[in-house]
Length: 170
Image: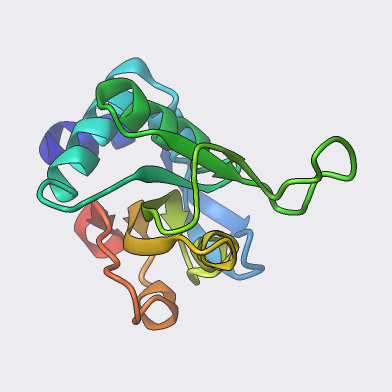
């Protein structure tokens, strides 16, 4: 499955070269646009299956992460399993229930945090802080691609398990 996903990353043009500014503010000559595969029917299915394999044997009550990168990944896993999902907003809603987390999650639940590309780990940490604030426990953090630029260090207290490291792709 991993080999198939790697092929799809290149076939869809998800891996690009040029001059880019990443969401972390860092400059890079490589950009990995994972939405090309997380929103691709075959890519979503592969990612969902790989994640389910990675969490096999863990007690997982819910899966989710910071919107927007985590949304299609969460949906893929939810669709292929009986695990409910949640979405962490970048900031609380200013209307209605004013929630930061949408979906199914509760105090005491074991959760998996997902994201598409991790550079510094800041997006994953934002999601982790939100779920821990409501009393949920993070049992694993999974990204499609770890750019190997700081995520491992910031997520050192969690089971960080990327599908790919940038060095594996290039």
